[in-house]
Length: 262
Image 1 (cartoon, one colour):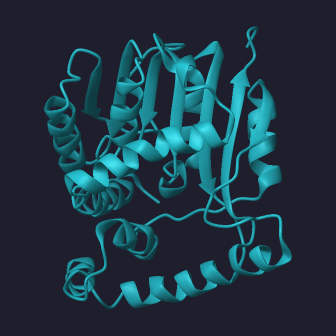
Image 2 (tube, rainbow, N blue to C red):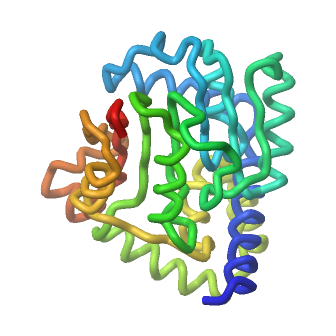
């Protein structure tokens, strides 16, 4: 695919996520911020670790993780996203919460992260690179800007399962019904923004790559990470036979430490 086609697809992705993420009202946004704390507590990762750290959220959307990290006392939090609309919303939410002194966001791509090598002690990239034309390049960029000894949270879609089969049928429907019409229909019948995001993004986004747990573990190992562990997603237990039938490999979420000598 040529560069102009990539740009066109990137613009489509930008508009899609800009619309979905900015639909969160203040209550739902604050709930999504608290999810960061709740999940890390459940995973046994002490929230106090983030205090005083330099952090990056690559693909920050409306800024929920940027706000969460800033509220936890991170010294500096940067967020990048390809959607200007999402960045504007994130800037407003940061300002409303009085976090401008430590939280900043800008338009930028995970495929070309606009920071020097080894800039951050913590990098989070949740559900982003699989929506790019070159997920491995995006992964390599995240590794590049993470300091040796830093922590990395990375998540992508897992392969297989009935849910993805149904979603791919939805992607065929999406070729006929424009996103704005579908989103409007879902609004009319009362589907909340977080639910619209969970389903419509995968129907309409141009790229939707999926992986096995083994593939992502290999990426991490080859990039010089240690203490690699998969952390559970609360909506289902991917270890059961029933869950494998419906969700395949599941939602692949990993925490890992970049080796100090990397």
